Length: 297
Length: 257
Image 1 (tube, rainbow over the protein chains, first blue to last red):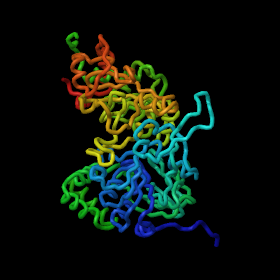
Image 2 (image 1 turned 180 degrees about the vertical axis):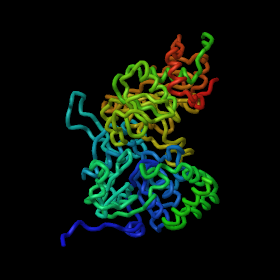
Image 3 (image 1 turned 120 degrees about the vertical axis):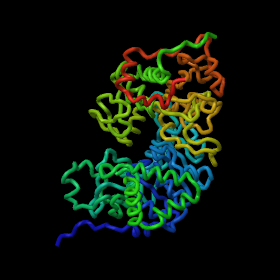
Image 4 (image 1 turned 30 degrees about the horizontal axis):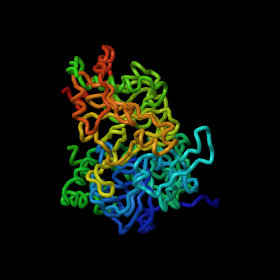
């Protein structure tokens, strides 16, 4: 019998069980798009604490902030798009309940991940210069170019590597070894997250045979190679309520309900939590289905 | 000063034409409008003064045609996922028109937070791409509700960098720094006033200079004779009304005074 690459299938609980308090966790996707929400919900309900969360943020940041899981947040924005301001994030910031807050420019964030993925201490760029990103993060340094290309030795922002202990990403399809493809319009930065991290846990809509990954889609859609992936979890509808095009779009009605609860009274949030978030992923999905049926009668 | 000129166009349409003019001389670059009126203005420019503009659906593709602002489907001419947007920012062939919760006398913009950084009174989006945009590619701002709360002496958080701060940050920040226009529902500005400050370029038809000065929370650079923002041409009027925004979505953002 020939040996193949190992089977990396895991359960949500096994993934979250392998995480430790104090870890630096990068969350893939972009704002309200293709977020590994099933894994985020499980962290929300876990005993994990003191996390450093690195994310172009959406409800992932909102939920973890609401649960008091975040000791340090590295972000460039937190938004739900159709609801521009994330209420749980706003609430946490306005109460100063996240001890350490690092706001970067969007492009600096990419450069930081790229530096980590390339095992460099930093990469230079212009973004950040002159802005309060440098003022509010006084530990950010500049670097003087050793070259003069006719404009002097330019002093550039030295964006430090955003090294991650763990990356969590959600894609459309994977095989059991961790090769994974995105079928929507945008890869976002999930490959960079994976390469910036010591361990990457991947949730997908569907686990298929390796041959199935390219049977009806071009090979260019394979974003992650198995050597970048530690574990694979099949979580159908696992990016809900963010987009996971073409499997599903954002659940705008549910997002509005989330935002209303998050910006409402403690009792309103508690009711939302009790109904949707207090159980496991299966009970979340069942509650979402009931919510959808209730609202489409 | 003279009495305000009256207008036959709606204020929203004047704003759309003023935004279109901000992109008129850009040549073949990626026009990135954030929000409704900037999208309308950019598409208007592409249909009139600058057909070479490269426009997107705001999500992941470059559009070959010019759809109405409420539609996104069109013939596609390229792929522009988020990672490539940052490449284009650094490449420089881009003009972004962003929103602004605050803009100050020195053309700095804030979309990050209001109040103290450590414990803001109101947390906003975060700085998004504003720091990188302003030191890499041409950047303009759109303000739909001109008021002293938006136009402040000093922004609480500097997201977008104005020319004075860019100069203070050094040559690398200045090299590609290019704040082009600030368009509000009352007037058009640039940042070439004395000491790198906001200068009033034109007031919209029906708006007086005094009105703009009063609605601005800092001392504007105002010349003795401020022109009136032009009205849309007959062709532009047809394009706005019948092609780009037949549903009149623009009036939700800029109601007629």
